[in-house]
Image 1 (cartoon, rainbow, N blue to C red):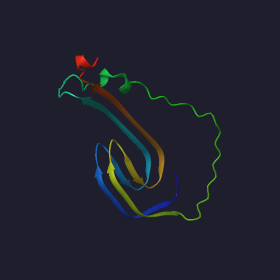
Image 2: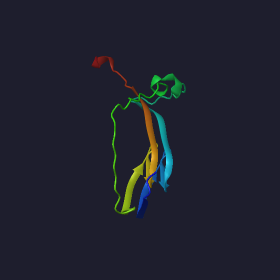
Image 3: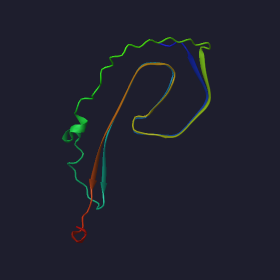
Image 4: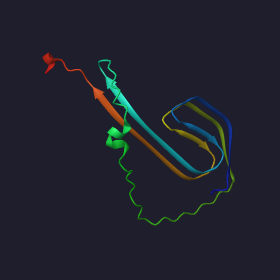
Length: 126
């Protein structure tokens, strides 16, 4: 893993919700995962069977990872072993967002959202 230190004078986060993470320090593995149903209706109605994630294929399909077939050569030189930032200011973080100050080795993030719209159609409009 990288051998640098991170220094931040001030971090201001107004709101962090829905499994968001604020992490200070190094990490080997970061895995973020979020799934959500977004329902929009013109007429107020609650369907108790709608919240089953297994009902929608978007939540059970495997994640398509394309193979990387390119050779990568990387050479780095860090003349200063420290990263300095004065201020990080974030208004809002949501849905498994991550603010990470430090070194990371492996990062994997995935968000799956099913949008459902129920619109009321007037017979005169058709």
